[in-house]
Length: 189
Image (cartoon, rainbow, N blue to C red; front, side, top):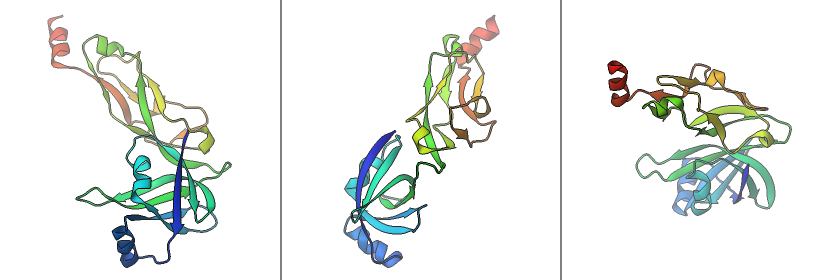
C-alpha cells in the first residue's frame, strides 16, 4: 500500500470560531483519533490535495509538531457549494489492531456476456473491508470472465485473503446488462 507524508501542527482552539480562523489562513482543521489521546491539528490545504482528490488509498505518515503517527484518512467534509475541504478525520493505525476501510474495486477480464453483446457495468466502486492494514491491497481485483448476459457478481461470492468483507452479501458489484442490440438478437433467435 502506498504511503503519503503529511506535516501538521497542533491547534490551540477548537470549535466553530477557531475553525473559521484557520480556514481563512488556508489551513484545514483535522483530528487524529484511535490512539491514546485525541489530537487536534491543522494541515495546509495544498498538502492534502493529492491525498483527498484521488480514488487511491494511502497510509498517511503523519507528523504533528515532530511526533510521528501512522494513520488512514477516515472521513472528510467539504463545503456544499465550493467543494473546498473543510475538515478531515484521521484514524491512527497499529500493526496488531484491525481497521475498517473502503478499498477500490477493479474489474479484470472480458466477460462472456460482453462478447454476446451485453454491457459490463461496475455497480460498486469500493468495498468496505476489515483487517490488519499490512494486509490491505491497493485495489481489490474481481475477475468477470465467466459472467454471462444478465448475470451479476455479488459481494457474498467474493473472498480476499486476510480480509473480512463488511458490505451486504447480496450487494451487486458488477453486472452484464442486456443492450437493445442484444435483446434484438435474442428475440430473433
